[in-house]
Image (cartoon, rainbow over all chains, first blue to last red; front, side):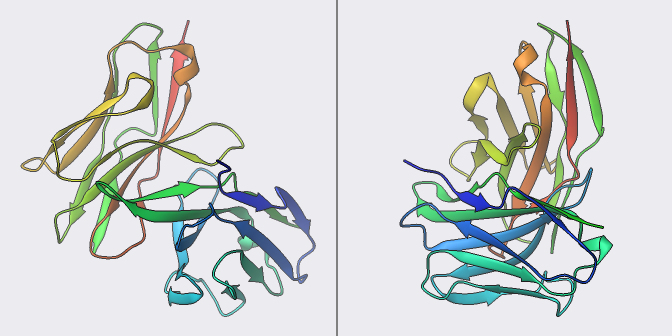
Length: 115
Length: 112
């Protein structure tokens, strides 16, 4: 079946612009996670949802970052007043509980460049 | 709290040689451990995972990893490297929280 999809794949923004990044999880996956991957680093957790409920947003770096999943499927990560330090790849993952535990399946990411 | 340390940000091996990528973790609870591979401009693909069923875990593409609790390690190995194995590899741990904590990654280069 189809995997996790993300759009756009690439986004260039001028400093101060707002951006919205979309994630379409695997159908039926209840949990959805957002990670930020800076150049040359491992992904770092931002936030996660179970259905439409945002259960943990402890990784969001500032109040300029906002995520939603209103119908428990598609999720949007919004960054307001972008700054150069927001430049990174934003990865979305969805998961379900299977034999042997929970596995997160990742999308291809959105590469954000803030000029 | 949990953390992952990957020793060696860059590893080079010859084609056909043994691949060994090191991962040490810390976790306050029995961990779930994962290895992911990332090809350029792509997302993360799961190679294998440890969930306490067996200490030696076999994954895709001939990779395997052994969980050693006494050493808090979960090193990734492959007996014979192939050119297509060139990529970045990430070790990750999940403890009491739902999210994954990743290491900083190891870039594997395979020399002809």
